[in-house]
Length: 429
Ligand code: UD1
Image (tube, rainbow, N blue to C red; front, side, top):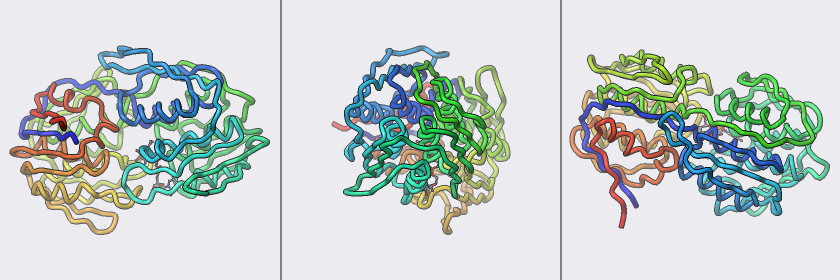
């Protein structure tokens, strides 16, 4: 298995191009199942999770071609043409679904267009139990019959789905996306209340509208969908990845560097920018992106609470914990979205961090300096927090099990070394 070796302590300076958002691209790809015409998506990142979704869609019968590299402001975004004209089977097999939890996003499209779907119960990152009850209860509200057997979800709606009113008891990005897609082809009106407001959900809604769907309330917690008989093809560009943006912003902050992040918006990153500014990092809007720098002054500890959008994103919690570990003073980081999302804590402590976990909160007492160590990556965002800590640490850090990183970060070592980081991948033989 590949490892990443970092020799830390170098301030990072330069420009990083931000790629398309993985978490926007995955539901957009699943939406291709909803029409017999071609959906052309551009600005897709080149990541293992995207390839997993390509395999899953191809297995279902979607014809997929890649348009090569489409230059986009210096970033090499991929373009995919997806055509779900003939979909002979409606089964998403365990072997593909277990690799990525977002595979569940084919459920809504399949049952709404074909009246049936058989999808393996998902696996994914090891961050808590992560049930799918909100997806299934929502589909039941729209008239689907759901059975669980042999590790599979069997959903049927022989006469099609019917519009309905779904009140989500808690906010779920994936359940909102699945139900939004399902409702587009249901008969009549559907209202989704307490819907997720993440920019990736809005991106999916905009793409569905481009495909002929009738959706109002986009960007709010109440989505109203008037069902239509069919959707058509469209051309659609994926939004920039706000988590990649935040991760490289922390790379600048934690090393005392100065990085321009190109191709990303300020508006979708306000909670993360607010935390960085309060901790003493300067974030300025520049043309087509932002400049993040901390060339003078120590970092200050800031309390953080993860929340659904527009709150602070759980996918940035591990990275900010690495930053707070090097700050002056204490910080309390509370994880309200996922249980068991502190797996990076013991690894950061092996680098000299002072962190104590009490239930859903971690008390981080800043130690100023971390020291390099051999480390084990556990999940996607935890892995990158160890890389960030390694960039700031004195000495050498060796991160193992980096396949987690390849699920969500495109050319990570290349982007960081272009800014002066001493980082390399050691490929396993
Ligand atoms: C998406 C993101 C992930 C991010 C998360 C929260 C993708 C591909 N992944 O994941 O990176 O960390 O949003 O912003 O977009 N829950 C239930 N029942 C359900 C569904 C969810 O109890 O049926 C719970 C989850 O266990 C979790 C919480 O709801 O505690 C939020 O999860 P959700 O928003 O659904 O996350 P994902 O869509 O899986």
